[in-house]
Amino acid sequence: MPNKIVIALGGNALHSGKSEPTAKAQLEVVKRTCCQLAAISKQGYEIAVVHGNGPQVGRLLLALETAADTVPPMPVDVCGAMTQGYIGYHIQQALGAELRRQGRPLPVLTLTTQVVVDAGDPAFQNPTKPIGPFYTQEQARMLEQEEGYTMAEDAGRGWRRVVASPKPRRIVELDGVRLLWDHAIVIACGGGGIPVVEREDGSLEGVAAVIDKDLAAGLLAEQMEADTLLILTEVERVAIRFGKPDQQDLDRLTLEEAKRYAAAGEFGKGSMLPKVEAAVAFAASAPERRAIITSLDRAMDALNGRTGTLITA
Image (cartoon, rainbow, N blue to C red; front, side, top):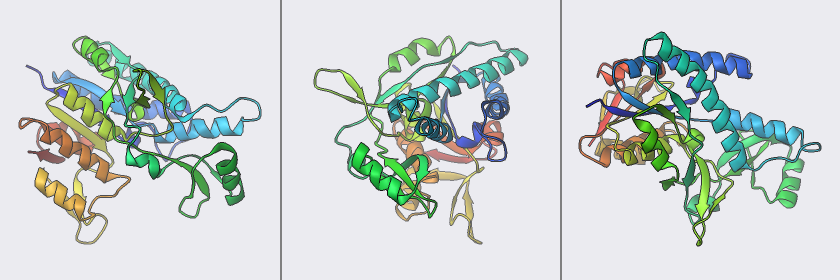
C-alpha cells in the first residue's frame, strides 16, 4: 500500500525574497517547488499539500488598507480565504503541468478549508501574530480606538496589527479531503486554514486570527491517518544552538529529546518551534508514524533516509 504523506510547504516554496512580489514571480517559484512535489508523487506516494500564506495575506491586507477610501477592507478570515484560492490556483497550474510532463497526469484540486479553533483559546487574550502594513504610532493609536485593533511595535520598523494564533482543533472539510484523496492531489488547510469558531447552534463564524500552517498540516496528517508528515522549510535539518559556532544539526529526534530542546528554548518561536511541535504531535499519535523536517530541494532524499531530521516515537 502506498505511503500517505501530508506535505507542509514553507514560505520559500511559494515566493523568493530575491524576486519581485508579483503573481508572475510567485508562479515561477511555485513551478520549481512543484517539480519536487511531482517527483514525490511519481515514486508512488499519495500526497496532500498544505501551504503557508504569510507574505501573500500581508500584501493583500496592505492593498485593501491602501484602497480603504474606495473599497471597504475585508476581514482577516476573508483575506485568508482569498489567498487560499489564488495560491491554490498557482499550485494547481504548476503541479498539474509537471505531473503531465513526468507522465503522471493526476487531478490537482484546491479545497477552501475552514479550521475550527476554540473561542476560549488563551491566544485570543495575547495576540502576537503581526499582519498587514506598518503604521506610525499615531496611526496605530487611532486604529486601536476606531477599529478595536491590537497594535504592537515591530522590531523598530513601525507599528502593525497583531492577531491571535490559536491552536487548530477540527478541520471542517475533512470528509471532503477523504472523498477526494484516492482521486486527486488535494491542496487543503492553506495558510493554516480559515479560522472559525463554532457557535451553540452549530453555525461557524470567522475570526480575526492566523493558524500556524505546520500545526494545521499535522492535524490533517493525523486525521487522514497518514504515514508521514513532511515539513519543508529553508534548512536541511533541525539544529540546536542554531547560528552559533557550535551549532549541531540533528539527524534524528525522539519525542522526549524534541520536547526537552523545545523547553530549553533551542527552537525559534516564530520559525522552527511550531514545526517541531507539529512533528512531535503527529509522531506521538501512533507508533508507526514519522515526521520529517528538511529543505525543499532535499525532500526526496529525506524521504529515503539520506538527510533531514526524522522525529519518531
